[in-house]
Each structure stands twice: as structure tokens, then as C-alpha cells.
Length: 276
Ligand code: UTP
Image 1 (cartoon, rainbow, N blue to C red):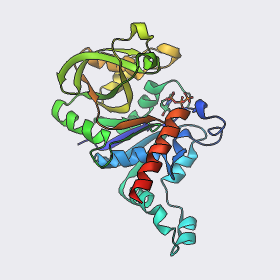
Image 2: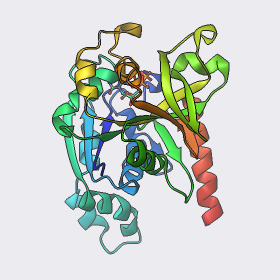
Image 3: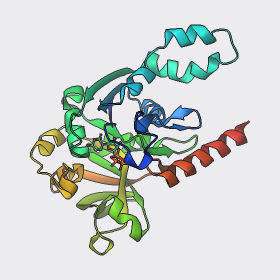
């Protein structure tokens, strides 16, 4: 059973300045719900109940969000707005939230490594909350990945086909197709130029990692952009045939970019209007 989900949330979110000057990017709302709450709900749906969040300076709003606000609750008790806190209250009751800080932004690999103390020696999921994923009323992306993990017991990265002129924004994989939508990863390149990309299968912000990844990250030297890249550590696992790439079912919005964020907002607005 995978019980723990890690949320690297220490980045500066510079593409959303000035909004992210004093507010974490992960707290930007799509409709009335912050991005990180969508991620936590996806993890809960996949059976996880320990949320390990990597924060940094200026990110305290995340901790306050996953805590009870007694003053606010007593203020709206009995009013027509009381139900607006139901979902977040249910998450707080069900999950344990743990935190540690990444002191310097040394890359996603380093942020994940900082989570070692919160994760221990067990397989775990990773959610980058700025990738907002939905599969409507069907299994969410993490649920789909847990099923694959239970069968193969190795690290899994979620991938999506992207246009060739977009590959330089992602880690890109190539591998042996072993099932519909499933590949055994043979190569991974971080942010390749289109002409160097081994395919157009881009890694998005959902991972299941086996705990040996921590020692591999510890051995990883800074890579592209001077950052500790998770793809470099994953490549060491892939060399042993221990990484699968899964083409997930559902939609993913890149809410770290203005375009993706607006797209997600329109999508969820239409969904809500449809249900009304
Ligand atoms: P991004 O590069 O998309 O996020 O990292 P960013 O740096 O916050 O955004 P921009 O580019 O400046 O707008 C992907 C994820 O990894 C986390 C980020 O918080 C984000 O969720 N991350 C990245 C860390 O936690 N620490 C890092 O050192 C780097």
C-alpha cells in the first residue's frame, strides 16, 4: 500500500509574479479551490493519507489551509456558507500533514530528497500541484498509477504526448512498449532540444517512486540549469529496468503557466455550470 504522497512546493512560481510575491503558487485557486487541494484530493482518492509537503519561505499559507480555522468556522456556523468548508474539513480530519522546508531552490531532485525524512523507507507518490489532473468521475491519475505499481513494483512516471516544439520544457522518455499505454523506460533526457529528444513522451507532475531513489539523488550531481534533476536519478533506476512510463487517462492542465491556468479555470467552470 502506498500511504504517503510528497508535494514539492518550494518553487518561486516566477511565471505568476506579482501574484506569487507573497502567496504560494500552490494556493492559486482554480474556481474556489487552491491547486494543492486538488492534488491532495487526488492522493486521497488513490488511498493515501499522509501528505508530506516541501515548503519554503513565504509558503505558510499552505500549512494554514490544511488546519482548522476555529474563528472562521464559528463565524459562518449556521449560515448558508457553512458547507463551503466541508471538503477541506474532511481532508483535515482524514489526513496527516507533515512539512519540511527546502532552504535553497536547488531543483526538483533536491526538493524530493528533502522529503526523505518525511517518507522513510517505503514507496511513495509525488504530486506537483501546479499540474492539475482530472479524469472526470473515473479513476484519477494517481489511482491509475497505484494499480500499475501494484503489478510491477517499480518507479512509475506519468507521461503525455506533447508537440515536438514543446519537448524542451519537460523530461522526455523513450522505452520499450510493454502494454497499451505502458513503457519500460530506457532513456530519459531533461529539457532536450527538439532535435535531441528521444520521443515526444513528456513526464508530467505525477510519480510513484521506490525509496532507493533517495540514495540515487544523493549521488546525483547538478545537471541542466545547475539543479539536481530528478530525471538524472530516475535514469539510474531505469538502467536497471526499474522505471515504467505510463500514458495516463484524463486531462492535465499546466497551471504553472498562465495559458494552462486559464484553460483549467474555463474547464472547471464549464463542468460546474453543467452540473448546476
Ligand atoms: P517549476 O519550475 O514548475 O516551479 O517546478 P517554479 O520554479 O515554482 O515555477 P517558475 O518556473 O518559477 O514559474 C516544478 C515543481 O517543483 C517544485 C515547484 O514548487 C513546483 O511544484 N520545486 C522546484 C521545488 O519544490 N523546489 C525546487 O528547487 C524546484
